Image (tube, rainbow, N blue to C red; front, side):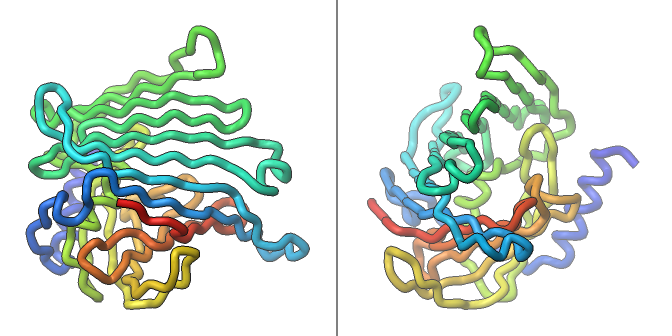
Length: 270
């Protein structure tokens, strides 16, 4: 079976078992332009490293910049920056300063372009993902930014794209536009690093969250890829969205090769 038919079959299974979602809410009613979310990120070591406590790893800042233009069409711009700090860089010997930019169509909230500038010690990568909805194709470009001039590592065409895909950043914001209900399952199609995956987001329960910004009533959402791991370190990712009309993420948690990484919101600005 070709990759195209495999994706189609998986999507049909998701649609058959999912609770039908309502139409998306208008983005500007949920996320005001300039909205900034700042998280403290911490690393919880695996059990066999019992002598290490939970360690502060740095900060993550996500911003919704509102509407702009891309290729002459109205779009929304979302950015994220992860910067390491505290004891974690000393422990690993790696300083992190990663930047992500997502450009999404203003009409249907489909991803048009994702840019990643990864600065993780000696490993430095510039990655560009573009999606052409009309042609059903995309492009995945990756450069080694540690060389001068940057060396091209990959230049791949992504074929047979579905009509609407998300990147890993826009997928979180698309979930915010849903009217989340406990027990509901929402299918997503996400493309990351040239790979397209069908993803289910499941609203599992209501759960309070204690964060640096204060206590929140929240909805716990589990994200699982039906075609393998969504992230390199594993296939399950948890996000707690505030149980109010804004649905902004107040906590996230992901298993990695060594332990667990989690973050809680410490500042919300709009």
